[in-house]
Length: 193
Ligand SMILES: C[S@@+](CC[C@H](N)C(=O)[O-])C[C@H]1O[C@@H](n2cnc3c(N)ncnc32)[C@H](O)[C@@H]1O
Image 1: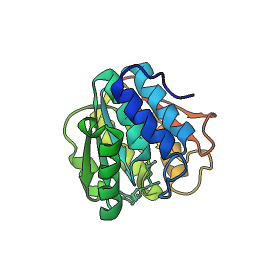
Image 2 (image 1 turned 45 degrees about the vertical axis):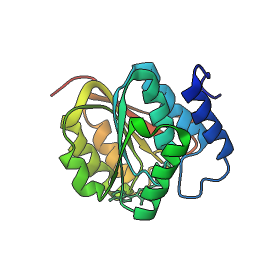
Image 3 (image 1 turned 90 degrees about the horizontal axis):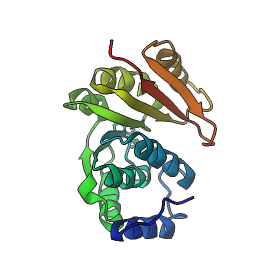
């Protein structure tokens, strides 16, 4: 289920991921969800990604690995200083630092300030703000881009309001992948309003 190893970087990232498979303790996504994010990016040739909620960096390493294939870059945001520092150390060990701009700060403030256009977002921070993160990212999303959100399966409070909002938009196509236990929603932007 791992991506094929084609070069030295692949070898380094895969070794890190395999070696650390059982040591993630900070609300990180499971391996299989990392692979789902990897596949979405590679399949669509996405190049400009944002992650909201880095924690110690597991999902960011999968996203960055995919971006090493497409020639892209990830901006990832974390509010907790210890997790941010641990994530940076993990990025270095995994060999993906060059593909990641890691920011320490409150995503409530940093997301609306992000410059430019993006084609991939992974939203995995405070769930009561998911809808607001989406609203802030919407004008920055490229046509064909995908806004993904974690823990979408249960439709718990916060997530439910976010899902109802994106599902009501006629310029996004939203589905929730069955391959993830926690649920990853995928909202593809079909046209620019
Ligand atoms: C579920 S964890 C992220 C896991 C990570 N995506 C992974 O798979 O490795 C959520 C993270 O979001 C961070 N977070 C919560 N509210 C935030 C905010 N307002 N701004 C930035 N980060 C925030 C938390 O500190 C926590 O580390």
